[in-house]
Image 1 (spheres, rainbow, N blue to C red):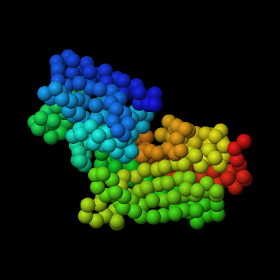
Image 2 (cartoon, rainbow, N blue to C red):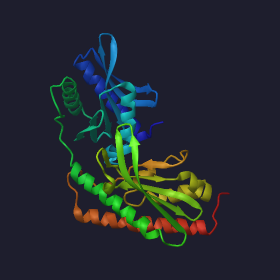
Image 3 (cartoon, helix red, strand yellow):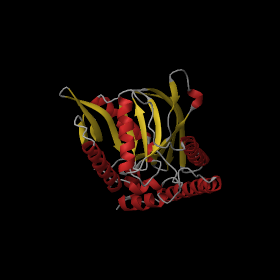
Image 4 (cartoon, helix red, strand yellow):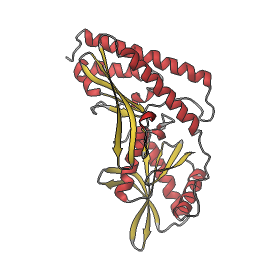
Length: 317
């Protein structure tokens, strides 16, 4: 089930796409919501009818606009890519109603663009995209975002979390495992450095992957960073209510705001970690430094509190 914010974006985007296609009398092009594929339901799929046969042109994965950088969620990108493979669509995209990140299979990043849910923006996007499909354009004409700055920002967040985990790894009550791996995906190989933090009896409760350029060879690139929090371990070790309280506290730590959209029925929360930073074209270096420091202090304090609770033998009732 889609989260409320995502469902609103998906519904409005579907309405705008449908209205534009009807108003411009694109009789052979349509948009289909929740299209079934072998891997699940694709949020939105742009389809063209060619000689009575359906041809999937574009798969769109919708994310919440709460996090301005959710279009850089690697898990969402891989979801969209998988659906595109299932439907044999040449293009796939991730959007949160603020930005849209467009890809061409097998592994070409066509850029991240400013993207608002308006008639004007949808008209520009669709007219450009359909020309791209026909080989008349290479890129969208929508304004590009500041992706180099965003990449630098995500890298700073990754380094900050890594520093916290390494700092606690040698302390009593904590155990840190570090490994460097090359992971195979359908589109190729990616290298990453994995850090697994166990807190007392809670084994590998936090898992962080960061890029590992040193492991790169021909055909291998650095994996995008992500973090995984084992909700099942927290729930079984501390009880459901205490686990909810702790995760709510973690959602207040800079860089972990996305945990507020947690789903406690899942075994873990799996999400690219992002930094909520204000206007996308105006990153204040001073404010960024303050947020990074807040992240390090907040995460360290949260993990120490978790260790204390585990050490006291807190368990579910």
